[in-house]
Length: 309
Image (cartoon, rainbow, N blue to C red; front, side, top):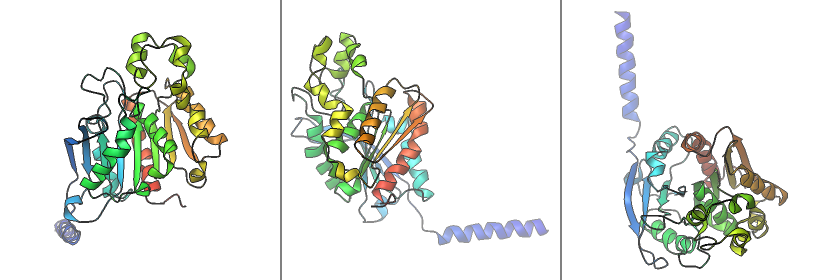
C-alpha cells in the first residue's frame, strides 16, 4: 500500500511540474528554401533550422551559417548525416546554449558540381560566391527571418571546404562575425597541390585558382592569397587580441593536418587568440559528428560574450 501511495505522489508531482512549465514548441527544419542573387544571376538554395519557440514569440535571434564540405557535400548533410538539429535541440533544452537560427547555404556551383566553389570567388570572377554571400545572401536571409543582424550576432561553422571558407571570411572581414568554428579545414600544402592529378586539380581548384594549371603555374597569386600566413598577415589582428574568436579541431590522421598546423602557427605568431585542438580521427563524418558539440559550445560563447570582452 505504501508503494502505491509513493507512486501516486510521484505521478501527481510530475503532473504539477509539467503544468507549471511553459510548453516549448518543437524546432523546425526546412529544406529547399531559396533566395535570389543578382551576383550569381540565379537563386541560391539553403536549409534552415528554426529553434524551439521561434513561432511562439516575436524576439530576434542570433544566426549561425553552416558551410558544408566539398565533393558530394550539400546543405542537407548537416541534418541527415550530422543530425545537427538534434544536437541544437538538446543543447538548447538543457540550457547549454541559447537559441539561434541556423542556415546552411548550398555552396555547389550547380547540380553536377564538377568544380568546387570553396564558398569563395573564382580567380576569373566568373562565379563570385563570397561576394554573393555578403552582398545578397546574408541581407536576404536576415531580413526574411527574425535575425538580430550585425556581426556580433552572427557566427559560422564549417567542415573541410566549408571550414576553409569560414576561416577566410573571419580573416577577410573580422567585424562581420562574432566568431567561427572550423572542423578539419582543408588547407593544402604546396606539395599536396602540386601532387594533384589534372582531374583532381580541376575538381578542387579549377575555379578558385584557374583552369588547366600544371606544375608551378598552380602556385599563382590566387594560391598565395589562400596561404595561412598570407591570410593572417593581411587581417586586422586588433579584433582578435582579447577573445578567441577562432575554434579549430582536426583529426590526428587528417590529410590536411599540416595545413591546419601552419594556420595555427601563423595565428599564434601574430598574437591572434584562437583555440586549436587535435583529436584522434580522420577526415570523415565519424570525426565531425564527434567534434560538433564542442564547436557549437564555442559559437555560443562568442555569441553570448561568455569569453568576456
